[in-house]
Each structure stands twice: as C-alpha cells, then as structure tokens.
Length: 107
Ligand SMILES: [Zn+2]
Image 1 (cartoon, helix red, strand yellow):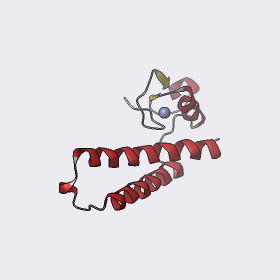
Image 2 (tube, helix red, strand yellow):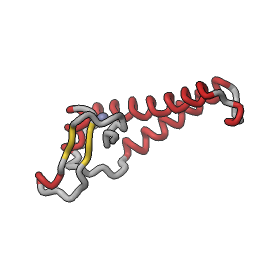
Image 3 (cartoon, helix red, strand yellow):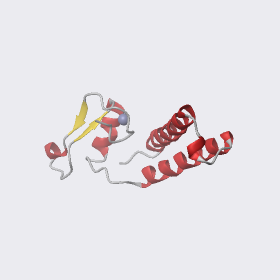
C-alpha cells in the first residue's frame, strides 16, 4: 500500500473522510505530515496542479539523466542504469510534491 500523497510505503497512517461527512475513499499515508495534507484535502485525491507539476519535474530529471548517460536505446541499458532512472524520476516527483505542499498548503 502506498501513501496517497508522496507514493512512499504507507506506514500505518490513514484517513477516512466519512468521519468528517465527506464523500471520498479511505486512504493510507506514510507519515503524520502526509496524513495532515490528506486531511486538509478532505480526502479528495484527484490529480491536482502540484501532482501534474511533479510529473513534469520527474520527467525533466529523468530526461537529464538519460542525456547524462548518453544512451537512448533502452535495450542497451544495464539493470543499474534502469534502476537509477527510476530512482531519479521517483525522487524528483516526491521532492517536488513535498516542496509544493510546503510552499502552497491546500487549504
Ligand atoms: Zn507520504
């Protein structure tokens, strides 16, 4: 189960919108920080501007990594190169989201 905010492993935190009389699915989070963000969103986790921008940031970082290794034929990539690409993209996505919610709380 993944955290609905940052997509890391959920670690025992949750949010049930029905308890505040909101129509949204129950969700899991990784931390009090992400649980608080979910509460401020009242459980509504449809893609928002921060998530869209986080994907763009992840794409830019992944593209920079591909340029750095200089190989565009994915079939020629080593397992380590592929794992690094995924790590670069996911880390950029998570970092962007955390900063965006810190700078622009959704309430
Ligand atoms: Zn989280």
